[in-house]
Length: 127
Image 1 (tube, rainbow, N blue to C red):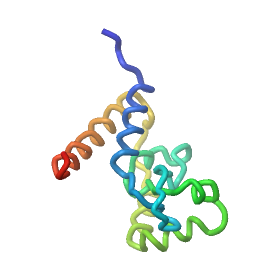
Image 2: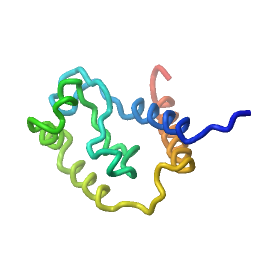
Image 3: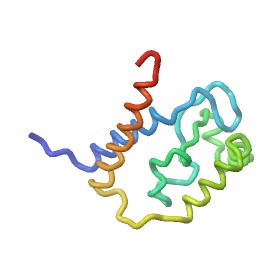
Image 4: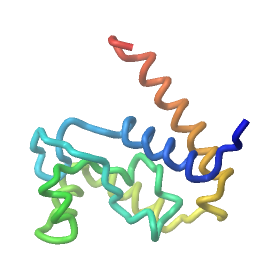
């Protein structure tokens, strides 16, 4: 039996994160063309926010390409609200103790995200 590595669990966690936090509209322009979950704070700089629900923002392709220009981030903050913004700011500065991005770290997040996904599926009328 092949032992699964860190990349395997990262791909699973990434897919679950996209599936759980996806919305059918862009959270910047509110167009009904949400494309993918964007990390408000880059996961390369803030790895502890990689799978945080508040750090995930759904953007259409147009807004995603311009996310660092044209006031897109200000639109996101306005649309998601001040409570969201304050909560995310606290999470940004309150870095938990590392290590991050290890095999065990990814396994933990796969387990947590899978539990969230199962809970959502149970509530779904399509289920």
